[in-house]
Length: 135
Image (cartoon, rainbow, N blue to C red; front, side, top):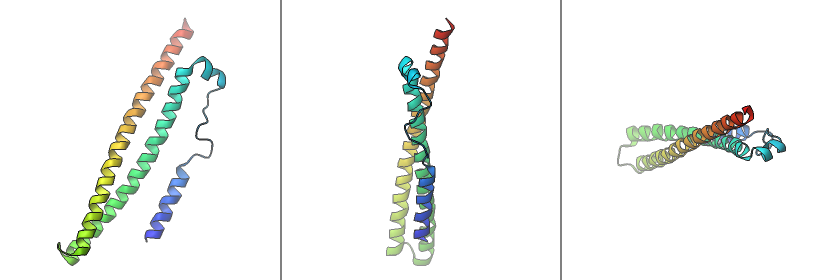
């Protein structure tokens, strides 16, 4: 079962990567030269979006691991009792998974906040650019 889980997770990670270049932007070189701040913020938004997506995927994987560890712990608790070495190891795995999940949840939250900030900066750049071209 563990090998199937690893294979599934590896396939999910590989499928999440884009087929094209990771750094390819839709902007032309002329746009990047004439509006460098806008181009920079567009790149930041794309990069942050990818980071959020990857962290969310990792968080989902750790959540699945944590849920499985919880089931294993509860089963071991019922069958072996609280003082059993098997139960203690299951509890340790559950605690480790919970700790990893909390770390990834915080990272995902921070990355989401950064993405929102960069989206706002990009929107401001675009508004300023529209105002300049309207004048």
